Image 1 (cartoon, rainbow, N blue to C red):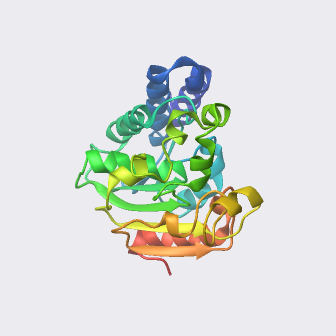
Image 2 (image 1 turned 60 degrees about the vertical axis):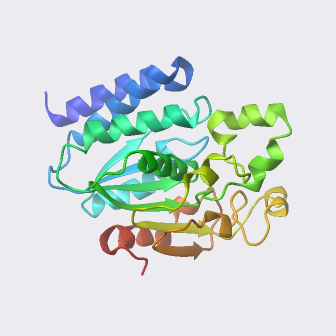
Length: 256
C-alpha cells in the first residue's frame, strides 16, 4: 500500500474513533493515528511542525496555516484532541505521544504552532519535557496569563460545563494552569489580535483584546518576539499576515 492509501485508511479509522465520545484512551489512539498518517507522505528531511488548535475547535480551523506551511516545505502534523471533555493533563499526555511517535526519533528540530488553549498545552508539555529537539514555537492568541472571560464563567456551573475541565482551568487567578507554568525556556513568538466581535468579552477584559484574550494577557516572561495584528480571536489563524509572521519566526526566530 502506498503512502496515500495508508494516510486515507488511517484518517478514516481515526475519524470513526470519535475521541470526544470514547474517553482519553481513544483520544490518545486517535492522536497517534493521525500523526502517523500525517508523517507518511512527506519528505523525511523536512522540518516537522505540529499544529495544536484551540478550545472547541478542530484541526480544520488551522487548515489555512497548514496549507501555507506545507507549501513552504514544512512537514505538518495536525494534533486533534477533545478539548471540552478531558483535563489538561490528559490532553498533554496525548500531545506527548504524538511528538514521540512522529518526530522525536529524528535529529531535526520539532516546531509548534498553536491557537488559544493549544499554546497552554505546549507550555505544559515543554515545562515537563525539556528536550534538545524542540525548535521554535509560535502561539496565536494564547491566554498565557489566563482569561477574564473564564473568570466570569466560573460562577455558572452551566458555563463551566460548556468550557470543559481544560478550559475552566484557564482563569487569571494564581492557581490557574497558565499562572502555574512560569517563564518559557524555548524560542517563542506570540501573535495576538486587537479586534473584538463580542462586547461582553471586551467589557470583562482590561485594555485592548481580541474578544477572549487581552493583548497583555498573551505575553509571558521569556518570549522572543510579540506581534499585534488587527484580528479577532476566532479568525487570527486565517489572516495572510499571521501566516507570514509564523513562517518568519519559524525560519529566523523573529517577526519581520
